[in-house]
Image (cartoon, rainbow, N blue to C red):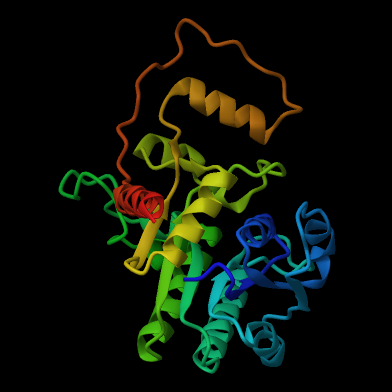
Length: 299
């Protein structure tokens, strides 16, 4: 896809959207940045030529505002940011996120210029299952697996529930409307504002023990999103992470980032040094990115 093409980033209010907007502008794209009204500050901090940046006010429940932002765009990078008046992740947010995904995919179906959608989901939509500890399960959890929505409800894993239901809604509409969509199931984003209140962290101890506590850096996430958009061979779901937390020292380092004001504890001699086996795979994305880089260098 030509870098000069116009693409829409929705929601550009959050860290993912703002980072994607900046990188796409640097690559020469015209960017329609659709933001909720609390997102002015992030876009204002973009450090690059903004002559190709067009900003749109977004309400995910105002269908026309979605259509206005998509008009003339060949692609959409979509990620959900909770409304400012609903900062807590609960079952209500799951309903909100599903409705937003439905509206956005329907709007894409009505926008003739849209060729491809990159839908940002979560790795938490993959690994929360009743059988996740079963030895009968494939060694690696990957893009073929889905979190169990009943399991998520039972243990109040609202982030996982929201992402699973929203992604399934998006896939159902994409298939029904013949839309070209790929989804990115991202690990815990190591953003500057990361804190212990991040809803992804619910069940962190179990994720660590199960070998599925994965994180992703902003630069890798942005590169991966643009890769799956520009590579015509990309398809389906992609687990997106570039680090796994499965050593005690890694877990301690993450804890320090999540709670920087908490006292630090020295590693003791009797510390559990067992390393949980990694049981989640990002081979599909890594293979695509390596091949895409190789093809780009040949051009």
